[in-house]
Picture 1: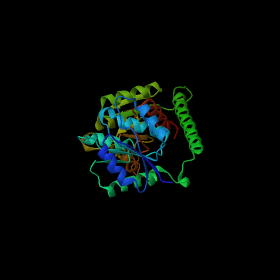
Picture 2: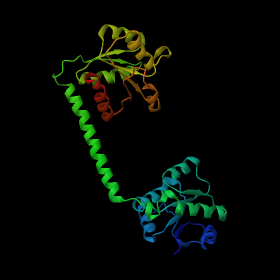
Picture 3: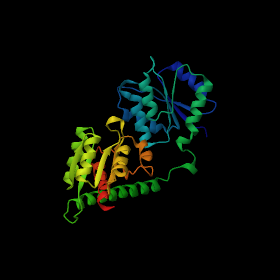
Picture 4: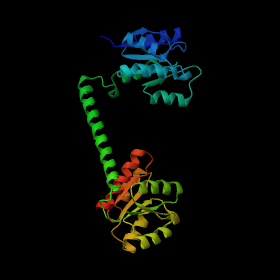
Length: 300
């Protein structure tokens, strides 16, 4: 049985051309072109009722109508691919990219040649992203079970982080709780200082390397939290080496904060002396994780 293509265009001439291109290989049925006077949900229901294997539809850029219709359809039938026919005048580039990013398989011009159209259609109908072959189909029950396990694991991790933060606030440990924060950002210094003090740390702050070195020598904090990029062209790695290998101040648990996740592997190279490298905290969850990992400096 031929696959069914639902053709939704307002142009009689274009409808006839496309039908002629596809009729030999597919069953082509006609549908209503997108209508801004109708709710996208209602138009999506009409498409679902037709049960097509592929939809070729006029692209209506205003209010992203065509994209909304596609989303409503694929929310219920993810395996139904969409090919959009460009508007007249052509849609802006950013609108086209948005449609592709939201799942459109192709975006074609009205003067497309038959060979090109057939290539687009065949690719959409049997492409690997559509998961049409039964041996590649998703086991929905297994996926649901995996999602449930992931949710439970995230909950346990979050609870463990909260537990560590709670234990830091108890008087059970007599270990020193001094922590030094080195950052040229006053906002970041105050943010970390507040969260450390809320967890019973004595939080020291420095805005430059010279000030930080003086505090390390005088106060001997157990934990140092440093930005990667520092003044005078130095890095957090340079500062760590100076503290541990030049001044030979130990034990110190040294943490580098960076927004660049690609940098972490090079920072943690053996020999640098850095104990941990973490992304700069930006949310309550990441701050919980941050404090939990900093707390390792009191345990190790």
